[in-house]
Image 1 (tube, helix red, strand yellow):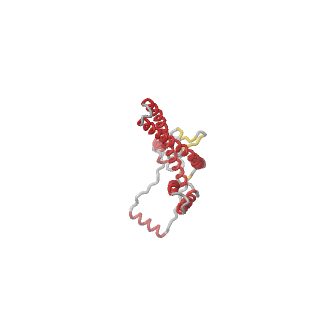
Image 2 (cartoon, rainbow, N blue to C red):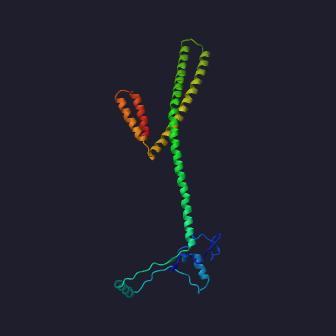
Image 3 (cartoon, helix red, strand yellow):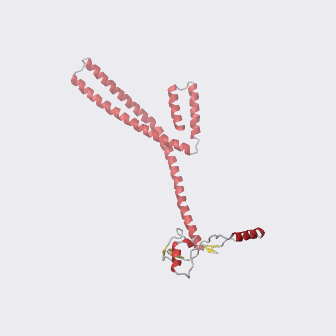
Length: 260
């Protein structure tokens, strides 16, 4: 019969203590449960007690003479024997400790898994809400930017007009320089701001589309089916001449950009 718990392990109100080393110990990180006879503390302790104390050793196989092996083989052949399983003693306290530690780990990650689910739901809602708001506000933004482009073009035309009036002798150099500087400042301001707005617009558009695609790929939703149906209807409207080629290509590119 082999024992599964080291005889030197003692449990107190403050935890486990190794009576051989006279210090607290974590039995789940040492040899206390199982092959404690291989523990260096146990082996050293038994040596210190002198030759009268014999430490337990791990069972090992011994090589038997060939004749003896043959006899044993014959005995097994003629009279099979049933080997009874070794009885292992496990204390109730050890079982409780193992159960407690297992439950602590499971409980810890149960909470983490639930938190991931909650975060994913929040992410889904945030992506959908942001995309819907962006699609609404984007139409306004495009109108504003188109107006700014027209203003920029108007300033460019004004510069050409000033150049023409000067070449025709309708204005003097002082007036020309003053008008040119004034118009050029306004043109540069609008042009620079338009470039900045376009860059920021593309970044926002790209980021939202990226997250929306990720959502479509990981979420069971009829959204892709709806988009494919819309694409089919768009093809039909174009064939029937209900929309222009320019509108068709623009809408098709937007739909395919989301699906692909």
